[in-house]
Image (tube, rainbow, N blue to C red; front, side, top):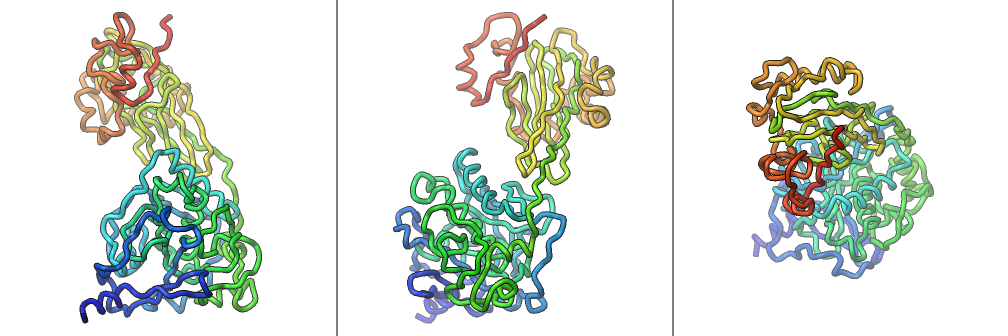
Length: 477
């Protein structure tokens, strides 16, 4: 009995607040941090099985030992945007006794017994993008970048988005630390959603509201009694926003001094508080710069050659993705971090046009200059490089092309790569980022649609084998 009670205390109790509106957590003794959940406690079911009026979102005040200098004043806007990382890929959450998104440390996950491997959101790229688009809309008024790619450096707020096996019971859509004045600017928050819920009452807007509310808790925003505001604790559908009006706080108030800067006692203005912290949105309308750095425009390769296609991209903010396109079809998967490289093995005879498309977090996109290469008997990689640097991006192309070639260089002895087949396996590019052999076949003789003379396999057969767009061979001249 005492052991059972000890576990219950370690979990903390949910209590009703303000009638049926809102729930709040009472923290257990700090000494019990990391206690496992009660084995008999209600576990997470599919929230879609619960009536919409019962769905709620939670916050937990930060433990006293994690509050620095009494919470300090709220942050002031800076030129650098605030970053929100929506992690849909899962992560191994650790227990360092604090919140540290960069280190994947979450005190909530450890306090309530669901640290360790956190599940991914699942779903297709289109399903994930629908949630990301709705979340970006929530934060569009503020100088904030919402991304599903981990930023290269901190601090940033991370929202773990996936169907965790947490102990909070049916109907809880998310939880976050309530961090007054954003005292710990690297919090980890949770949205207990998955792609399987999108077809029901928990569509993209509802899921985005959960993400945005839990992130805003990490900035000191509390629950308020207005269903048109994102900070309303119960899910009532629609598409709420951070409203520019003072509304009464419900379920008890922790960050009163923060709210008092904009509203009378007991009220909160979600919009003005976020505006005061991060400033107004300064939309980035500048697309990235991108070039194909290897191969060079005009290069000629031997039939069956192996080499690495490399692109270079930069942005005044941050590059979010780079794609390789060959003859109008995307190939080899999207890269979200450097190196932006794709391995080619056993390339068939033909002429090909290559280019890369880079995008930033504001969805600005740019296409590189087209690089044309040929594959023929007796081809010598690098033949066209001396004449093509300006065509494929100037100095950036020339500087990086040589390095790429040197790393993967083979038997030809040329400065710009040679036959790279022997070294391609050592280039550090994983199989998941490479192109299939021959852009889809193990050898050119088997009849790839992009090979020149001879019989071809039906295009549909290749698509079934690869699940990738076919490379279209350019017309021969």
